[in-house]
Image (cartoon, rainbow, N blue to C red; front, top):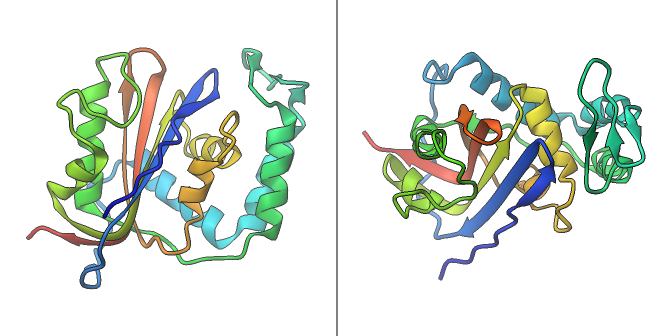
Length: 223
């Protein structure tokens, strides 16, 4: 029996993120891949940022510590940028910093071509619309999309970030998880059993940019 939890809420005014984990049965050990040439430079940077956060969470806490200095109450006053209103303000950033300082290092995520293609399907469906969330305009779920290109097992999850076109900002926003009481996006990033990741970046009519990230414990690519 599969179980899912939807953590779809606005993280910032400029960044809406969604996380949706699902459980399943384990299968064989996932196959390894060579250099992920199928990913764009930004998509590879997102993978690198995720792995930096997972392997060196205390280093990532330092990034957030600098970021926290730009807050005045719930407003983000970043130099040279438009003032933005967040839901929780500096408190959410400080809570994320505390989490990172106590978080243990964990295994890196290995990129998956099939999972990235599934993420790309979602980007293509939403990039010309104002739609957000996990359900595709074709009615597909994220598990169905990644299953088109391979077989996942154990646990899988999808995070979607809207509004950022910088890898560090994408990952920071998901870790801070402003406005999401469950911190579901952060939980996906720091799920210790995850080993595979797929990433796709594209445009969005309302938020300008979107980045879809898929995670799984195990994933066997279709040959």
